[in-house]
Image (cartoon, rainbow, N blue to C red; front, side, top):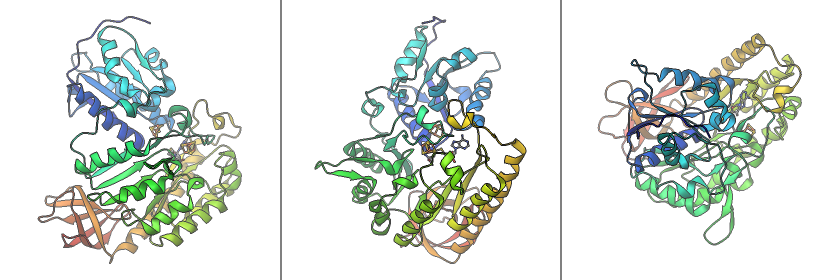
Length: 449
Ligand code: SAH
Ligand code: SF4
Ligand code: F3S
């Protein structure tokens, strides 16, 4: 253990989260943890005594960003805040980070951040503060209760980690094995979020539909059981979940889309590629056909459901015709929205060592073609919504004075002239205009339909 100069106790802190919604959730929990220690949040990193960079390791660009962000925290007088690197880069690189830059005081992995207060004490005492354990004592058992105030739309992590080992992906290494949080802990946290003002809860997990656990009567339940239990919370209006794996879409969960009133008609179901040869090389464990059958079953349960997906272009060995199969599965699936990425070789993953890595120019060109099609689908989906009367949940202020932005059941952002309506209200609107990323609406009634 190395010794370095001791530091004064930080009074203020700033948490900055990158990457997926699970990191956003972890960032909120760290904020609650540090607040419980008596520290106050600062709006800007530059003003804080402690900055937590809650990082993402999924692609090289995301992972490298942390080092430029650390550089930017240096103040004009040459001083810097205490810096903690948390999240998936912390897990993947561990002590390597403090070797690469002397400016980092704390390295703490996604399963160990409940120990942040002790690590701050270590820094103050001049001790090394690197903790990338995946401890048996779950962070969830130790974290303080949820804050008394919550946003209109809240995240709730119910499942973590991944056992799927897609050959390109770091998540099984950075987040560890699949673990489901207990039923009662989830329902208690949901109740606290609703009491704090949440009207919508999005259940989170790297493979959220793999969630399983025993209910209060000892019966084995899946995610659909949990959703049905949440449906019974009186002041909760909407339930969503993300991200799902195609192989874990059980019939029970599909049926819930037909039967549970509060479950929103939206499903993020990444496919990654359209060619069976590439899917096999990715170790996705589903085929093009089995994926299309799953979405057919989902659509027959809930015909108006909006689907979204993720795609990777330029996986090692991907030929032009295999890429065209990705374009064709995009067309066949008729997504409401989609996210596409250039393949990024990640250290320690099997795909990084595969032959036939694709040239950067080829990836760029394929990504452009894919994104052009995706935008067309998004525009078509949004335009098809114009003329509908629906309910939106008002979530935030818009850019224009008097404007609020809400979400449709299909996760579209809808801008309205709000009048007396307030954030947190469910209101009935007519959808009157559409762009690629949002819609315009006119309020019909402040009562939800
Ligand atoms: N558990 C989720 C998502 C995990 S990461 C799932 O299985 O769908 C989010 C997205 O990042 C993935 O869906 C994938 O499209 C993308 N991604 C993951 N690893 C990547 C890599 N090495 N290069 C490029 N994109 C990647
Ligand atoms: Fe990564 Fe695949 Fe697991 Fe998703 S299912 S987190 S892409 S290994
Ligand atoms: Fe990134 Fe970790 Fe999420 S790698 S996408 S922050 S699980």
